[in-house]
Length: 166
Image (cartoon, rainbow, N blue to C red; front, side, top):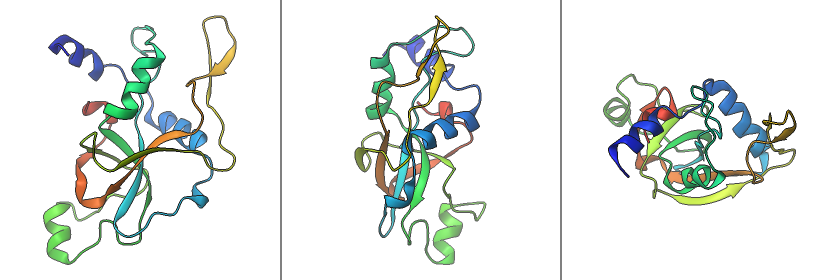
């Protein structure tokens, strides 16, 4: 990928990350059936939107699906009972502000960390968007959402907005 391509990716993101989180949770549905054990963390992979909110340019669905496998920014959706826990020295060294991450936080990790899968709980539905013809259509052409199960020690850091890390 050329440098210009990487720069383009940094500006291709959601204008509203609360909306991105709602779309992810709508596609995931009820998380009650997802049990995460030990120090594992279930995360939803951030997928850039089809339409660039700044330019109005559309990207192909294949480019969006690349985020499944190559995306490094993830949203915590569920933590195992021992995730991000340890003695005081571990907490101080790992989380300088003393606050371990929790569901709803954006983290980043190597794209090949953990196990990649998809999840669709009860009540899941595809988020809709108005297309160029004024019709309401699914934003993504898949059901459920791409997730990873990652050990809590495999995260590299936390970001305020997922497009900061690509």
